[in-house]
Image (cartoon, rainbow, N blue to C red; front, side, top):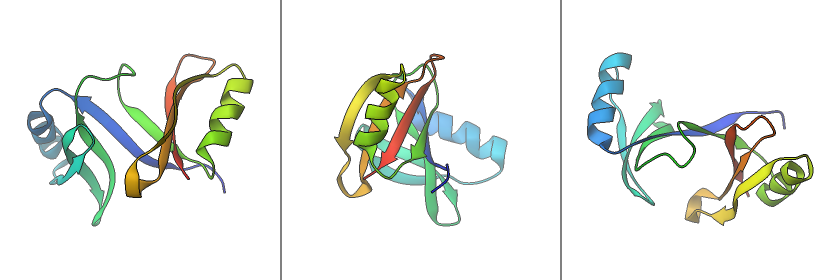
Length: 115
């Protein structure tokens, strides 16, 4: 399967102000999408959302990347077996699949996304 980043989230208290920052900096328009924590502004690759500015404080201290995995539960179990810390167990996110979040042995917070 290889490794790929299939989503990222940038948290902020004011989604629209942060979106304006990135739109001006990148010279592009961001999309809009409803998420679990409210409205999100999405970074697009063509018509496809690939990341978002999400409403709220960061639970990780900053931007979170989501690595694609085939089995979220198995990936989290492997991380825990290798001195990782599971921060969010396998969690269904409706039609978008399943996620989990972990802290690696160096202290980095990473999320996994899949089935």
